[in-house]
Structures are given as C-alpha cells and as structure tokens.
Amino acid sequence: MKYFNCLMLLLLIIGNISAVDTESYQFIDHLLSISGPKAPEIYEDAVIFTVPSSYRRVGITFAHEGFSKIYWFRNLMVSGEIPQSGNTETPPKPPRITEVDSGFLFHVFNFPEGLSQLEYRLIINGLWTTDPMNPRTKLDSGTGLTLSVLELPALRKVDSIFDAPPGHLRFIYSAPSGEAVTVAGSFNGWDPFMYELRETSPGYYTLTLPVPPGTYQYVFFHRGRRVPDPGNPNTVFTREGTAASEIRVN
Image 1 (cartoon, rainbow, N blue to C red):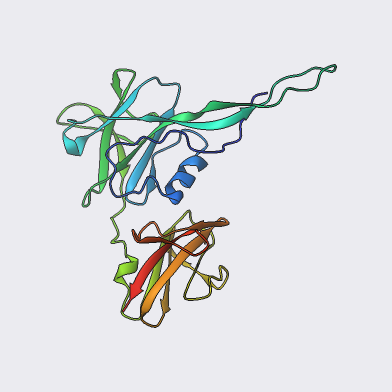
Image 2 (cartoon, helix red, strand yellow; image 1 turned 45 degrees about the vertical axis):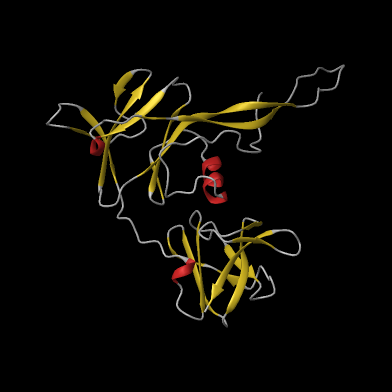
C-alpha cells in the first residue's frame, strides 16, 4: 500500500493575497494540516477554498467584484516516501522519494472590510457552477444564477506589538485554537517556559508584560519551534546565530 509522510511544502503559489502572511510558519503549518478538500474555512481575514485535485482546472469569481475577475486554484504538492515492494527472498528496496499529490487544490482569498456575506461561483473544467464543498446557495434574482454563499465574520482590528502602552511589551500570536504558545527573550534570560500567552479569542493569543525602557529581542515557542514574530518586520540574529525579533520600548 502506498503512503507518504508529509515532509515539506514544495509549491505554494497564491494570488491576490496581502493581509494573510502566506509565507509565515503559522499559515504553512495550518495549510499542511488540511487532510483533504472540505468546506470553505475562515482563516484570520481570509477564506481558504479547497476542491478535489481530480478537477483539472478550477477558478473562483465573486459577486462583489461583478464576476469580473477569475482567481485560479493551485495544487499543493508535498514530498513523500513510497516504499518499494520486495518478496520473501529479497529484502524490500529503500523508500523512493517522490512528489505526492496532496489530494486537493486550494485558493486563499482576503475578504474586504464591511462585507458580511461572500457570494461566488466556481469554474470547474470550463463549466460555471456552485461550490461542491459548500452546501449553502442562493438564487440571484438579477442574473438568475445560483450562487454559493458564505457568511463572513466582522473583521477585528488586529493589535500590534507596536501598539503596546509605554513601558510594556504586548505579544500577539495567531495559531489554531487550544494550543500552547510561549515567549522568551532578552527580558527573561530566554527562558521558554516562564511566560505563556493566553488565548483571548479562538486562535488569538496575547500577553502584556511591564518592562524597563530599552531594546529587546524575543521569539515565540510553538509546537517545539522557535518562531520570530510574524507581525514584527524587525529581525536580528542573536550571538548564537538564530533569528529573533527586536522591539524598542520607551
């Protein structure tokens, strides 16, 4: 039986994305956790659409844009190991490293502020249709078309580490709900166990600490990995040669 172990992301080509950092550890880790096509998923201020990779070519177009643009889905390829067969007289051959289809195509779309409902259609192999992964539809009286419908949450103003009050560090991290996220830095001797962020809303972790004025380096710890702050563009390298984020506190 063929199987594969997901090792790394080989192809990540996404169009029309600005707010969601698709190169961040959090996003790639979340994308790799998707096991197959499913209903549209809200991720921060974007929607992840997925369809089976058996469809050759899939596009998506939106009513709020007058169906004037088509965004094409992409294939997510991962590297994997396929064991080679043997028999009772010869040992199995070493696994062969290959590129394995993840089983789905995807598109990530940032929804604009003020939009409460997303109405859209798919183009699957040249045919205009509704989203097979989304059972919610409506009949558009103006065009007579059946549209797929997705309710959107109100966009929350996302705080930044740069919004902290004077004399404080405010740490913010996005991750799947129910996980442990800690922070360490030059303010606590790089102890990764001292400060754990609190999940103040699903997938949104925060922590505010009083500190003396000065310049501080820090990283998050999530699932055993050191993660520089995706929301802070100021990256430096420590004396050990590892990347860290840097912030000035007045």
